[in-house]
Each structure stands twice: as C-alpha cells, then as structure tokens.
Length: 464
Image 1 (cartoon, rainbow, N blue to C red):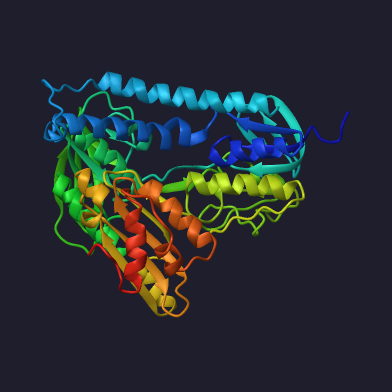
Image 2 (image 1 turned 120 degrees about the vertical axis):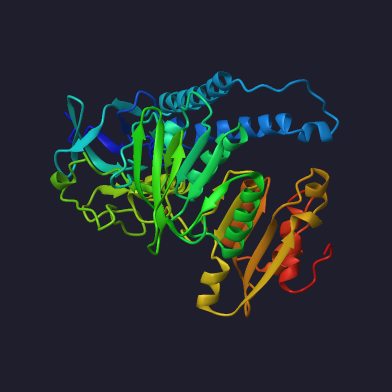
C-alpha cells in the first residue's frame, strides 16, 4: 500500500477548489477533491454567482419589456407578464449545466470526487464520510458562508439570506435589504425590477464599502433614480416575524429614536465568514486568526508543512476569481513550479444595471500614498453608450503624478464587468495612463471610454 492515497487532496469544490484540483491533475499529481454537496461548484455555482446572474439577466430583460424601453427602440409588445416559475427554472437549468460541467472536467482530468465533508484527523490525513485518506498535500478551499446578524433568525421564508433570496416563490410587496454591499444591491435590484418595493438599510454613511467615493455616490444616485430607497447611517436593532410579515426596527447608527418598517421579506446581507467550522483544524495543528481566517505565506502555505489554503478562508477579498487564480497558483507551487497571484490587481464587479467595476486603489487610498493625477470620462460622451440609450456612469483612471503608472480604474456602465479586464491587464504589466491613451480601441465600443479617461489624466480627452 502506498504511503499516501493522494499527492493532492483539495477540500472544497468551489471556484478555487475545483480549479486547484484540475490544475494539480494536469500537472501529473494524483488528485482528489472532497465535497459534501450533491453537486460540485461550491457556493458560487450552486447558490451564489451563477444563479444570481441568471436572475439578474432575466429581470433586466423583463424590465426592458415591461417598462417600455423596448418600445422606444421600435420593438412593440403586447401585455408583458412575469412568469416567475419559468424565471426560476432557467436559473436552475444554468446551475445544473455548469455544476455538471465540473463533474465532467473531474472525470476528464482523472480527479477523484470524495463525496462527503472532510475533517482533519492528523497533519496529513482527513476523514471524508466513513473513509479516512492520507495525502502528501492538502489544500483547504472551503469558501465562505453568510455572516449572521445577531438576534435575527433566518427562516428562509420571511427572513432570508442570499440563498433564500434566490428562491422566493412570489415577488415581495416590500423587500427590506439589510446591508448595502454587493450581494444586497444585486439581489435587491432583481426583485425591484419585477415589482417589489426595495428598501436598503446600511450601517455606514454610504453604500458599497471599499469602493471609490465617486462610484459610491454615483451608484446611490442611479439606484435611487431606479426606485430603490436607502437608509444609510442606520442600524437594525431587531426583526420580528408574525405570520407572513416582518417588522424591522431601526435607529440612527449614532443613536437616536427608533422606528419600524413593515416588510414581506427581509434579506440579511451583511457579509460572509470563512468556512472553517467542522474541519477539526486542531487535529492538524492549525488555528485561525481573529477573523476566523487561515493565515498563509505568499505561496499559500500554512504554518503546517503540506497543508495549504486558498480562497475565502484566507485574508483578502472574498471573490470567486481571486480563488480561481489562487487555485492555479497553489497547484503549481505544489508541483514545484512558481505560482503567483498579484493581490494588488484583483477586480471587483457589482452586476447591477449599470454594472459597477473597479481594480486597484480608490482615489482616496491612492492620495494617502502620494500625489496622483485623475482622469474621468462620462459615458454620456461615448458613442456606443449613447446609441444604446445607456448614458449613465463614467470611467475614472487614477495614476501616480510622477511616474504616470496606473494605480486604479473605476467604471460604471452596462458592461463595466467586461471592460475592467483591460484595466486589470494593463495594471498587471505596469501600464501608464499614456500607454492606455495611445492604445487603439475599436469603434464604436464602450471601451473607448477607458481610452478617453486615460487621455483625461493629462488633460487631453477628445470627446468632452
């Protein structure tokens, strides 16, 4: 019997986990992946990124048809009706196709799926279901789960988390969203488009914590224009459920008189926490930091030789694409190659309409490090956006005042999530604003706004 059952055992099949497993197998390592869900893909594919985008896209199309936007373009329809059951069905179909796709890739690359949740029994051994296995290298990639709000019980009927918000059987008359971050705004926008009144409660003085101040301000303006109501600098002190309704009690974050809001559904969306409970890390000699994360070095090694960690369980933004890049890097490091992730250049995207995207430093963070130059270009000046009746938003480029090196790019427009890739790639190669300004962009495209914003850094945009 071999000393080890596997060269690499990955715990968790989310974006980081399944990518790490496939890459390790491609590099010739005998690999397994432990996953207790009935389908692979983790939170992202099952109840996160993918199903939420399916509902976002469908609800956008519904609003275009029902709101008269298509009629203005010459596409006239009869009475538009919402078939929520069909909308949910296409969401589930997308999930089924993509999770099944990972299972196919596992078989193709000879990755063994250990069906069950893993718990350490030693520094190189884990128990998965009734089976105990040993691996030379173990990668912890268990992702994250919803952060609970103390004193508020999530019943997934009236009070829901992000998973429950994907499954609502009818459109709420009034949806209260607790938390003005990415997930709350995305899911809130889904239900607003199909008819719900949406009120977002945010403890801080602005929505989208961590985003550039100009972006936060413009996003709030646009969402209010669309019909969302915001109560910032406000804290939730209680949620009481009676029958099929909820009463949310709020008060100013700085203290003050309390008030109540009646709601059909309440979405608790205040963040996520690392999934480390149940792993029995103590048996492996591992501990978590004060935030419940597993600390690693730049190569994703933990303090225990042979144990690695990636994705939401380690410090850094909890983003699927970050986890995927780390999955590739950790597999290559295990194989003796050099796997690196530049954590300074990881884009973030909010898939509302318009989309919101950013990479690198905010203007505020950049200024705290030294003198900067800023170029900004409104989408109202972009020919493609104007032709598509999408004038809202802008592109903002932040560069070092002395070297002209791009430090951050922030975008609000319909395809910001796609556009941000160019900015991230440019920053990865150390581009200056001039490099972007003198790169030829196809016409007419939304991406021309990136060129114009880069030109604006030195005060020479053409179309404003």
